[in-house]
Image (cartoon, rainbow, N blue to C red; front, top):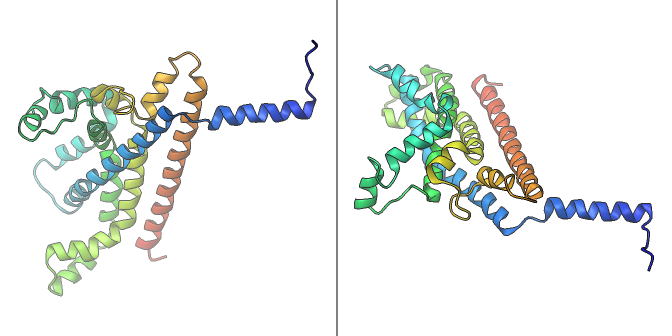
Length: 253
């Protein structure tokens, strides 16, 4: 029985349908990797931000012994190979680590090979990107505004809460967005510290790594690549918007 030949328009419709199925037929494991990446990124950013604000404030406003060492340590994750950072986290926060062993024995908290460990690794790797814009934003604030508030009787904490923090808010938001973008794309430290366990520690990056080594995994890998690019671009655009607003605000434009 002769096969029916498709017309050009029919072939185009079929090709578009196949492409649509290829790009948008996201499986459950893929969705789990996307959602876990978002979860890890949000938790890492929210936990790291208060620490980053406090440290950025100290670096911007005070001179103390060892300041250069602290500043270098903050930026160390940017220059260390991510695998080295992940291995150090494993030695420190693993079940037999210096801190991880105590947390497991006394508090029942486990980071190694858990999604919480992925959040910890992402928080460490994104921390420099949080601290830097916050520190620059605080340094750009006119000190006379803080001095005026102090003259009117405001305590140092009230000055920080009512003057410094609101003026630094655009920089804080920009740092949070950059940190979040870094967190959802982190791979080396995460896979070293918490491995690549589907549904538990497998983020977008580690899922792509697994898929490109799997026969017929190219389509699924490409879908995750597109999703990852879209999320990163959105985060970078948001960061640029916040940075511009911060510049205009500080210059009174």
